[in-house]
Length: 254
Image 1: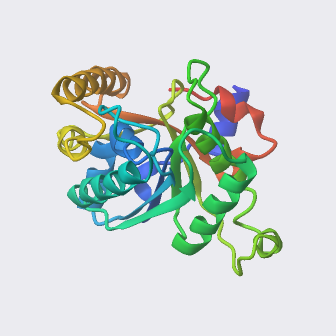
Image 2: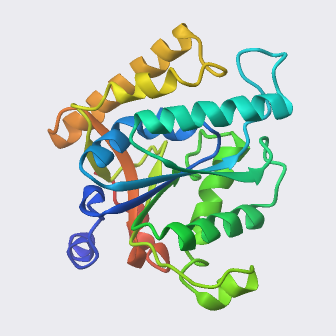
């Protein structure tokens, strides 16, 4: 009863009800792996979508001899091509090295700067609280996104990191989550994942692509059945009121 009342007063955000979206990726392919069908659905509906890639992806791919600055340049081009297929032209690459060798506070500052510049309604990032997740870039990206929620809205905080202005987002949505509470229909756009990931030739061969797409097909069927909406991408969504001193929101899974 208590949670039901709270949900009516402070509802879970409806993710397709906004106009401006920012997707933050730990590496140049993660946004597409997790969210490509959702992104194509949003851009097809006329929404504005931006990408911010936290790290440069220099640490490797399917060719062990290819890494460092050469791979960085290749992966940026792959990311731009993939984004274009999804209807996204605003792609920003942040100056952080792949592999977690950076301070989380620095990552949060970089993300906050982009939030003030782009002014999104919704920010998407990997869920840093999934117990099974062991990749430090994914954990740091999600945590940095959380930290940025309490930086970007405040002009005094932004001035302390050299930025004039502020912006408060309306929702934060985690992908790669084990506790989804918000869903986007992707039956008509599910093929976008395979098309987008095919651009990332430095990272995936045909078998890897097939395996990834099969996993997400099964996941999307499962999530869609939960909501009786066909294929679905699932996210853990928080409104601004949920983001501070509101622990009950951590329990809300549907």
